[in-house]
Image 1: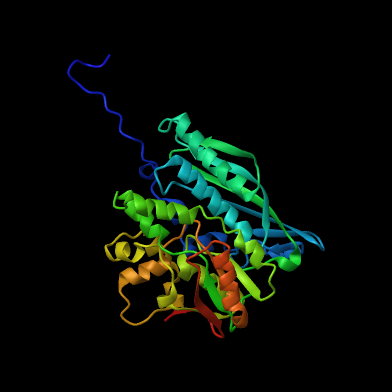
Image 2: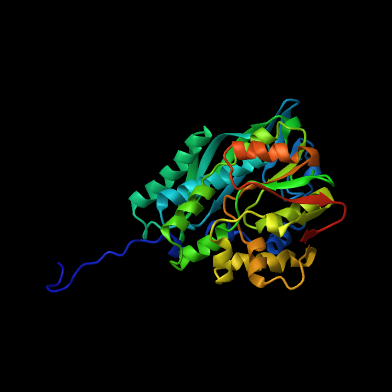
Length: 354
């Protein structure tokens, strides 16, 4: 019984406060991941494995026949927002993106669920699952099963299966010198999530971030129909520099990023300059900074914009230069208003920011 003269209060549960990281900022640092994967068996032992771990691509691809390959991926993370339905939607959008980034179309998903059942209500967990199911429905696929555990921090994501014709497969390792680079979404998701953790982002900012991170990258499957599009990857936890560097390494080329042409969420630059930066941004720079050439005297906050971990970020598309403007127009028409030509591919190695 409640004591006389006291008031019973129930503080709202904030998902973002139940986890030590959030979104794709939870990823292991690139250097740590490379160390853990060192010495793994060579994928070449399986000739039907068209894409494995060799170029840090977005998904695995297995060729079934001359006309069909299966794409398989998995992605899960801890909350970056407090609304459970939004968390489920963001996590599902992020996981399905890997299929689109390979030029494929998803056919089904399996849910991956780890929840602190002593801290979250059943209603909140159902909302997370419903958010994921809603995005899968938007992508035209079922959640056909899954697995769940009791875990100390909330975790949700999907394993996703897709299909692609082998000729339409788009890897991150096939960019060609001369290609233009198009980014389909604005950067700054990690910066926004850092502000959310400190209750420093207003409702408009939260809504902008959710709108971006729940926009499916369906355009990737359409881009793969165009032979002028040579390579595609999605920009997630390693930031535009990290994923651009994966393109450079895999393609044996240099990627050049033009800072002035990068699209950002509305308040990303303001918040970065004010110090809202994730730990993952620092880890990213420590992992690959030696391979990056930056302009002299670039302020740290501007560098953080380039290493900022994106959750459910846009596609980075390498396209023949003569087709770049038409490709960009098609991406805009498909519903990606912030898409922009942000750089190019050259002979050389590493990544350069100008």
